[in-house]
Image (tube, rainbow over all chains, first blue to last red; front, side):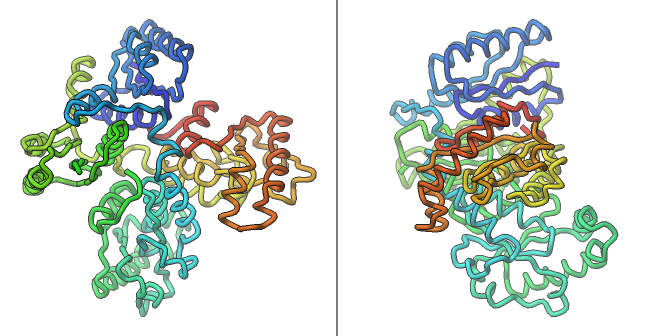
Length: 269
Length: 269
């Protein structure tokens, strides 16, 4: 099996996320090796050796995706026997040309706590945790968005993703079974109506998810799921709450759609 | 101000994370616009118009970072008056050549719930939430890793990041003030010693963070922080628990270092 290396003098997150996205386009298997924080010539030389060893062992040139800010380290890796894809420099040069200014390279600029927006993100994670599942409705005034929906429709993971990825403060509020016969918007939510965003899901998928949590319960039954979803969707329509169906969507996709629909201001790109 | 567009027929996460990483290398300000889910020719033509309008308004050609899987949509965007950086195709062609096989493009392959590892990640998020802050020590046998440390040393956000980004199940356990005079490893942790990983931090930084939570408390005092950290670091050394100092590190960096030091198997790249 061919080896794919993701290497950087920083976290290597850009290299691995982007490199892996490229490789998923090809119908082939790879052994994936991520090597972050390669910060000295000695470490870079060891990595170079490891790449060369990989070539010797498999007879296939390893694919090497890298994002070095340090020029000298980059050169060492480029001299390996791997097929190197230099994610930064490939684009830095044309961008430099277009902008008419030189880059000011600085290691650990992305994915570091020295990013201006880092504190926003940690605050947002703490906010999401403290305001999960309808806790502390008095804090809703600090929310950027309040996700609503039935239990297990994806509110919590989406709130956390919005916080970690974008520094967006997302509270969430569950509509629970007891509310269903006369589902009204609680006054605390009504007060913050412009911030509300609804999630829904198909009854089949919801029932599957709930089965894992409480097997063979009324809570997990398709009838109960269908009933709750019907009431909740009716509420969304009556109260003109924007909503999306999360059945076929990942939390990344749900989050991207919510931001795109609401125009929410993100703290981080 | 020049505009930077991040555009895709998927979430545009790759375009914006990578494009933004490139732009942070330059000492310039940009207006950032992300346009995900551009899935029809009509939408692509609107985006093209928006790019052209941006050029007219500012007199500066917008930078356009894109990752279209759909060829026809990609062509429409490429014909805009923006300076286009095609993240996928720039690398797909040389990789195709090296592998000797054609790509099998499929929209929404990354960042979608159809990724094989998506369920691992959601399970891991639920696990991290259920096993935060020493809750449910009986579940430690399911953990991939157990983060330990004093209160506010970064355990919870790191656990969540490990779950969301990598599908790693991280529990966490706080050493609290009451334990400090005779700090011993609780038997439930001792049982899972190979999974333990410690976090530490400087007393100054910890005191700052705790001040935000409980201003002017004994809990936030530099003396109390220093005492707890000294005891905890002594425990790490006595029990040979690997640990890192998180003071200067982001959760991305802490996570990358933990994975690199422990060799933890990630479920997602």
